[in-house]
Image (tube, rainbow, N blue to C red; front, side, top):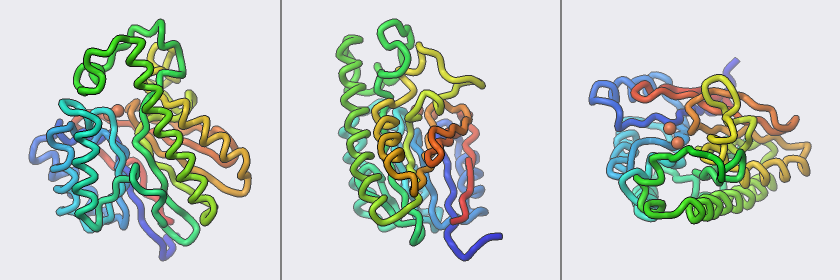
Length: 269
Ligand SMILES: [Fe+2]
Ligand SMILES: [Fe+2]
């Protein structure tokens, strides 16, 4: 039964720059039909030159509050600081766009709050040194271009640690007021939530697709709060999984196909 609470729709890895005009309109209509109070966007929205204009287009076309994080693709052909500043500017100027990296938490109902951070794969799971995987990130994002493999790992760790430290603060703050949290992020925070093509990613891919630092803080906090529950929504691997990390900590990873964005799940809170 649908209670008189909020309807929350979650999308991730929508890669809107791969759509033509008709595809974009079809995707927007599919959200309009659901008419969520809150739309969660889990990153990989588009690329640096157009991510802000797609966010503004969604804001214009929907009545929903739009809470989002960014994914690695959102920085392609740009830099971390440039894209960050741009989405901050449009979010600050809007009363319906919320960049979760900047917000401690958002109340969804009197019992449930939303926290989030874009996150970044931090190179710590799997075997970074032996991995031959080389992502487009490392040539298409200014901050990574020209870095040696060792320097790149240092940068990945810094970004993972930033995400983890902010998530730690935000989750702990939100848990003072709410027992149930939803956490929106782009990068899977655990090995068990980092699937690709039907199985857990191998040691070559894990360093580039999971954020151990974020998972460590989530696990640590939730072990100490058996009375509370955390549901993590992530993406990035484009492969569905549902992983129960603890009795009170589960992670849902969205699947995705370029050119076919979809609603992953609707929550009735
Ligand atoms: Fe993606
Ligand atoms: Fe991604």
